[in-house]
Length: 126
Image 1 (cartoon, rainbow, N blue to C red):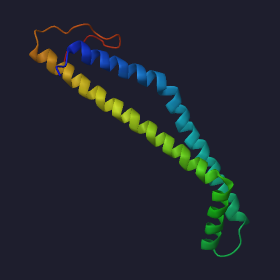
Image 2 (cartoon, rainbow, N blue to C red; image 1 turned 120 degrees about the vertical axis):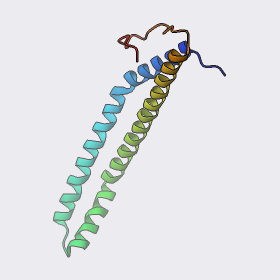
Image 3 (cartoon, one colour; image 1 turned 90 degrees about the vertical axis):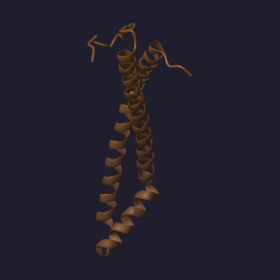
Image 4 (cartoon, rainbow, N blue to C red; image 1 turned 135 degrees about the horizontal axis):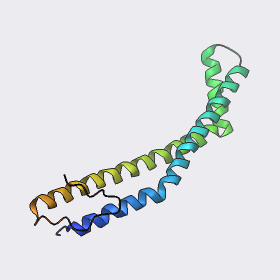
């Protein structure tokens, strides 16, 4: 399937729009991880201080208390969501890098026409 300059340019603009539309969602996901981690660690520390016995036993009791309270599950769920968001961003970044490389190659081998420029381009040539 042939790849056109305009097709690549259109896909790059779609990637830019996707990143812009989902930025708030991804920022909220990162914030949720920070809050969940803080809550988890606070609950674990409080449970550790309440527990009695040798240090290792107190750590075990604290972990059990955090798991039972639901903070652990909230934390790992938030981390999983953030990890997924990071993977999506990384994939979009990779696709945009490939697209930019294709555009540069097309410019070098083509008729010198750069085609229409995206709104976010400064118009500079490589």
